[in-house]
Length: 108
Length: 115
Image (cartoon, rainbow over all chains, first blue to last red; front, side):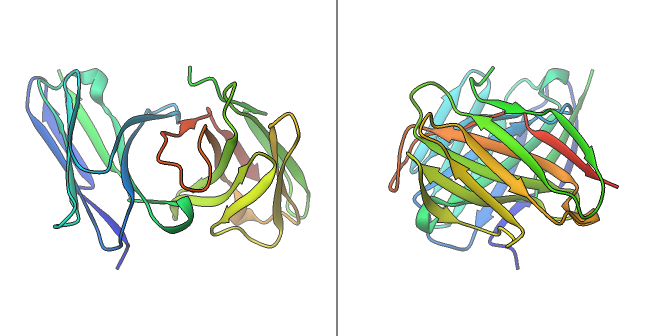
């Protein structure tokens, strides 16, 4: 079993829909990151969380430390949100362990 | 633009060869991380340097080595290349150290193809 599991692996949505991507982890962590990788390959850090909730524009990230679970929500989704979203946890030694990614396609 | 630069963008080479990938961190960042993204393994942490010293080691093969120079740029050396080494190699920088909770900024990556 992987230390970091994401669901779903693939997600197709219509423009305007509310989207949720889930991340579960099995190890103790000091922080959790959500990353976005565009089709060209570049990676952008969206959020870094150690507790609670963060919001940036239409993106919201939450984490429940007790349940070892985080969610990334996208409100009013848009085709430009199409990308791979990757959850990564920071464990011992400041290392990041990555989930397998969720490939999101938002259709107009 | 994250402020992290990587060269070259693309690299095509043959099995058995050796290559060097270069990363320049954001101005002021002391930490550099190297990651490998392959089709079958996804993203994996390779190694971290902080202010010239190795700080953490992940799934880095013995054929691979890295260093961080006094000007804080870093190089990842890959030798005796195999077909399976074909991947995207990312570096990221952050301004923290051993117990850093700081965000990492990713470079654009180097796409390595081993033929």
